[in-house]
Image 1 (cartoon, one colour):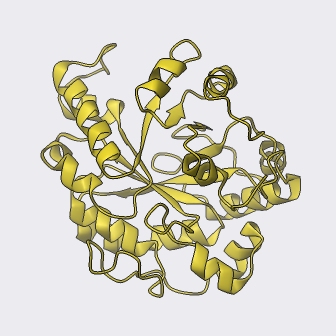
Image 2: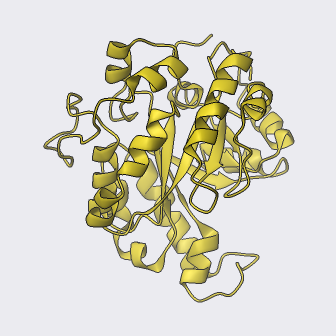
Length: 293
């Protein structure tokens, strides 16, 4: 069934929600864990390096384990892997200064990056540009400058994807900006500083999914603990993020449980957290998904 490298993109392109697992810290990055996770129930694996260890050697061994343990039942070489980068998206200057992180992460053959603390459209544009090769031109001059990713990582990344050098250069580009792209770039809107510019941030081309990060946003707004129910300012932020996602063709991320996943899907959520295979089973049944895990 696979006609893409990135299973999550293939599903989103079909209008199907995707389900992920993996926390902010503690993901085991070993070859053995990769072999095990090659048959994981989720559509993508979140590797938390914002707070977890920035372990490129471990990530490389993990990706190799996924390849050796694959393919998946859906015919994909590996499950999709998306890494939370340590850099904060507070300004274009901060993002560009730390763009080496994106190069290192992408060189391991992962399928996407999540930018945390996204606060300005300029920072988001710098993020997208840092993940793109200069030869890929869709969107340049229409919200984006020329890509800044350098060559050199293709031998490792292309081998994980199972494509040749030329195909990797063409396909390592953000979807849905590039309909043939296989990179899934995401954002967390999770600070008070981002709230005045939510709509501008999510209008930047090249972003595939986004969320309102309730943990960080709540503490940014002065709450010592995340409130059990969103206070009005957090609910408004979540609603604005979702509306801006829908206006720009960006998939909206929100947690769900097996009990409420159908309601979440019907409300427009397309990337579902929950770290629970029962939630995924219920959601897949609700949308009559055909693609096997």
